[in-house]
Length: 485
Picture (cartoon, one colour):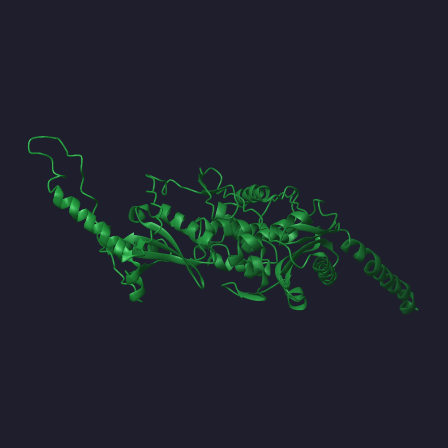
């Protein structure tokens, strides 16, 4: 009898659990608001929008902004990929997903970047923010300044990892804008977002979005995110036949349903986007640097991307004490004069000789007097005249090398090869400001190679080139000497 008495209680628990699984759990999973946005990355044209300007929880999509600021700091010399970062207790105590960093340990910056981009590690993202700005709160303020400069007008960041925090909000449109800037502004780092696995120093890590990357043709990024308040978020990018589409979803109900929705939106984007369209890269924001620094504005040249100005952050140690000498613009080569008839030259020379013999002292002033005769000696035959007959009879022109008057300043140094001329010029300027003592007076020169653009300093003596390289290498800047050729 006792056994039968317990049966109703047991069936009641089963019934309650069934109701919970079928009704309560799906409702809680769907609680996060939904938003979606699709754009043509080539020109920024909007192809689809649904609730795209609603301010929602971005979750780990936040790390896209964290990494953008880190890439900017590396490019402008605030920190390098090989710099060692000491892990704070605050970073080590961040909840999962995490790399497993221990407080007090050190790790190279490059491994933190990989962990944040690939595994979406919260401890790595917080450590990156602290490494750049000293504290996560200060880094969040920089994230907000950078977001405004990028045109992300409805985003506010409170932390570097995207964990739910009051006021930490963004939109599907803003995250798509950020994804487009990551692709165009930092192409040398964008490949991180498509790595299925990566070495994060203390452990290998796997991509949180590997299912979509492996299943959707052309997908090469960018970032996933999940918290209970945000739901399942994703900003994805894919390229097919020269067309690139970026799609963002907020508030997915599961990883599978979110991936399916993003794939559907990417398909929609490829269907609506024109096959051929002019590429309009987004304008890069000016470099704002750290708070409290006084940036020096450098106007962008005609051969650089269309940005209003570029700034270089200067600390007290790197303050400019004198201006670099501007380099003279090379003059165009003037072709030698060519006279078609030898007889014309001979007649001109004969007339000059007759005038010279008639007035041998015509060009010399009388002794003790400043008087000069009215007749003047004709100019000597130009040394650069080349006869047409000579050109015809000599198939290989004679090459004359001018004797150098540079005092042995035919050495140089190379400070790297870069994917664009703009990047190479930028590195040359930054290096010149960083090492004025030995590079002052040298010529900054970009040389195009099949594999990229070489950034060179030329017009140096062997001693100054050797000294400059040793000083730059001591500062962890790549450098090697270029001998005379």
